[in-house]
Length: 294
Image 1 (cartoon, rainbow, N blue to C red):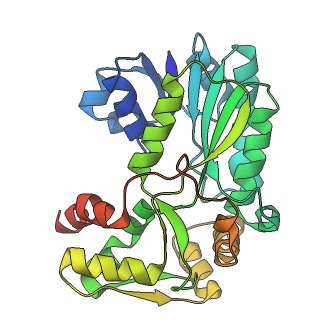
Image 2: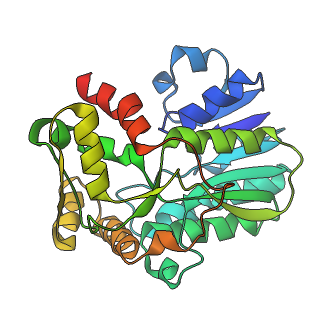
C-alpha cells in the first residue's frame, strides 16, 4: 500500500495516475473527495481529512509501506515554519508509530548554498525535510527548482496582454522542471522497494533557461508575441498580499524569489541522473497552449 498526500494537486494527481498504471494499491488523503476524478476515486482507498491532522495520518499510514509527502503551504499561515514544519509534525509521529518504511517528499533546492537559510518557503521546506529525516525513515527528498507549470498562474495575463512577470532577472538562466517529470520520478521511487537511507535527489528539467528564453519560446508556440517583464520585489510581495496571503507568507514568497535571483537554484551540478526530459517547448505545446485555448 502506497499513501499519496495532496492527490488533487498538480503533482499529486499525476503520481496517483502513474502508480495506478502499475497496478499498485493506493490510498489517498484528501480534504474533499469530490475533487478526485472519477477515474481515480474508483480505484483508490480514500481517507478524508487533512494530512496535518494526527488522527487522519494515523488512519492513512496504518499498513502502508511508502508515503508520498507534499505540503501545499497555507497562504494564510502565521509563519513559513508553521506552514511546513508544524504542519508535518503529526505525520512525522505517525510515520514512526505505524512503521512506514519509505517516504518520498517534494522539497526545494538550496541546502547546498548559503542562501538556503534565508529563502522563505525554501527554508521552511528544508526544515520540514529535517523533521522527516529525524524519524529514521528511508527518505528521498526530491529537490526542485521552479516549476514550468507555475506559469499557469499567469495564464490570463499571457493570453490577454502577452506578458508575464517575475522579480527575477530575465537574463538569468535557471533550471526549470515540468510537474509531469517530477511525478514520474516520485512514482518510480515509490514503486522501488530496494533503496535505503536518506538522500536528496534533484529534479532539474532538461536545461537552464531564462525568462527571456521562455518568452521567445512561448511566442513561437502560441503564434502571438509574449514578453517578460521584471517587476520590483516590493510589487511582487504586494501582489501576494492582494491575493490574501498573510504578511509572513507573502514575505516568504518574496524571500524565495530574491534567493533564486541570487543563485539559490544553481548549487547543484547537472548530471544525467538529475536531468529530466520535458523541455519548456514541449511543456508549452502540451500544457500551456491547451490551457490558453480551453
